[in-house]
Image (cartoon, rainbow, N blue to C red; front, side, top):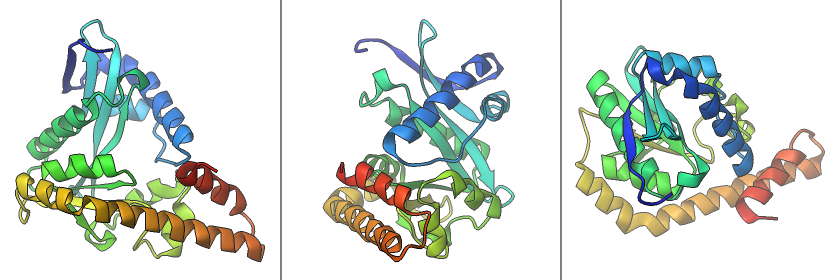
Length: 238
C-alpha cells in the first residue's frame, strides 16, 4: 500500500456508507488484541459524521483507510478522541499518527476550552499523544461522568477497573489541558527520556493484574478464568 496518497479530512454526511465497515473493523481489532472497547453501532458512527465530529482517512479511489471520532463528557468540559481504527493493510504506515493529529486539531477547534483525554494500553499511542502535548495523569483528573465509565463495561479489564475503585487499570491516562499544559516539544522530550520507565510500568501492571486474576481463579470465585486466559494470551502469548 505504499506510494498511495491518503486523504485525511473531517468526515461528513457523504461518508456514512463507511460506518458499517468501520464498526466491524473496530470489533474485529478488539477481538484480535484480546481487549475490549466501548461498542458503537453504525448508526452512532454515522451520527458523528453527520455532526462533523469525526475524521476519516481515504485513498483517492474511495478505499477506507482509517477513522476517529470526538465524544464530549461532563457537559463539554472534557473531550475524548475515541474509536481510532486503521484498516489492516495500512497499519504501521504512520497514518494513525496523522489521524490523531487531525482529530486533536478538530477537538481544539470545536471545544477550545475542553480538556482532551485518552486511555491507552499502548506505548505507541502514548508516544503520539505526548507529541501533541498530552501528559500522563491519574484517573482522578479525568471526567467522572458515569456514562463515560459505563463504556468500559465491554472491556475485558472492567473487573480490574472496578476492583480499583476506578482509580487504576491496565490503561494509562493522558490529558491535554488547554489552560495548563507543557508545550508539545516538552512532553515529547519527557516521553523519550522516560520511555523505558513507561514500558516497565505497563509490563508491571500487566503482571500484577494477571496475577490477581489468577489468584481469584484458584480461590474459586468464578467468572475470572476466561479473562485470565485472555490476559496471558494477549500479554505473554501463552
